Length: 203
Image (cartoon, rainbow, N blue to C red):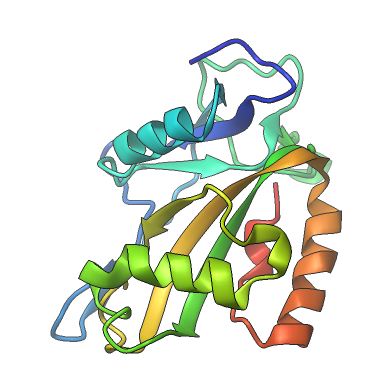
């Protein structure tokens, strides 16, 4: 982890108990196992100096099915050594305080479900080519030829030769609030029919 700066990439690493799975599992025979119900989490704010360091961190995180990343940040004063609910709004009737809050981030993470690509790019081996195609031919020109990080989803490679599932991360020039990104994402879906999930632009 590096010290925060205006250019560093900040996020929150969310860690569930080791006996819990925070990811879905898909199998070639069509079987699917959903993620576990997870009540308790530990939150760790992290800052990465650049996209290479960010990519390296995602590579490590991907090996642990009980770990994920969040755009939001722990509320000030939260005990980071304790387990907490993942809660954006407090529930006084249940004595459940808020634990996370929305914040502006200088990165965008796209989650693409079933995006149509060229033949062969839908297979797992075509993930990088699919990302280049989506970036340079389907996304707005702002993203063309820009450095990005691409990751597989649990169902990558299982939708056929011309249907890709992937996540793509870009750093942007200034922090953007979640609400702005969700509004922009809905506009992007309407204008381009790109199957990008706006739920990823939440704390």
